[in-house]
Image (tube, rainbow, N blue to C red; front, top):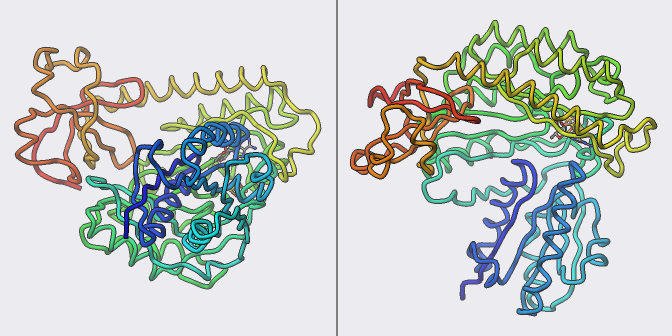
Length: 466
Ligand code: 5AD
Ligand code: SF4
């Protein structure tokens, strides 16, 4: 079969990154091979996100820029997948005349049949059917890229939580979990492909399997923990209201489970939390943080925040700041609230102005930057096992003591993460690096200092330690 070129671009969350790989996997039997050259592609798939207004704008502006490729090659197929596709459906065909296919988040496995039909008839198609189950869950395990050692595995789709600002339950549909056997098989295949770390994905992993009567999330983790040659397990995201004592205890107990949790709180104020329909209070959240640290003292904790939720007063925003000061996160993502069509908060009154939202966002980021800097500084001198992900551009050689700029050309800069998810760079003589490639191994690094968003250090021994 002649090889056709597939170009994919992904906007949005890790689930979209996973979906893009699945898309490439299902299209391979049709003769499509991935390319980085958009100009010569036969099929362009734009995997979109609608969680915040900005992401949706980005999707449409990218789509607009594709007109010139379609003009140059009328046989080019332009397909739009992901959340914007799911939500907008055929409106996208009307709005963007060079789009051939709109396929929703549940249509990935129907992609080959849709593309084949377009190839044969040059028709324009829309498939945004949603289903409440994962009745179609073929094991695809599209190959990971050469040298990749970490990958995502989706364990559940959809969300039943209905936070008032959020479009996900309206777009991605009801929560549905994959069967553990499929998940385990997929991870085993990926470990055979060289993967050493998996990040399990779901909107709310703590309710994994509940509906279907499958095993619990912790039982799933236990089984994944037993997979030989897998070094590390991560997961995201856990809803604070559902974070169970069993999962909290698993952090100290399952040796492959990384000491990191992403626990989005969104706000530190009880009234706002209630209006967001988060179904926990500030004190309940703080109690869980305390228990996590009791169970696993060195756990890295990160979170998501929304500033400028409708009606958020200055005092309520201050409560978010004091929560950040109390928890002292290892990192956070902060977003300015944006209306999402279909999400109840879009109809709330007392919208906050863009300028106030911007100011609050900056205040929050500055606050966290100070905390991160202090936390990084406290790590200097400590040794941490780092799972090496590969090499990176040499950073600020002049600020890395012991590395003269003249020597830098003989050095390779390696990059990896600590169990708590801190990024660490360390230099190594190029010749030595050639002899024993470090990618995929656990290296022990003594932290020497801090960059703006990462740490640097030195490898202290060749021993691979947990
Ligand atoms: N406006 C701003 N941020 C949002 N998020 C979700 N919906 C919105 C919205 N309407 C943020 C939340 C969530 C993260 C993935 O995106 O913080 O945890
Ligand atoms: Fe959206 Fe809330 Fe579900 Fe997360 S838990 S996907 S914020 S509805």
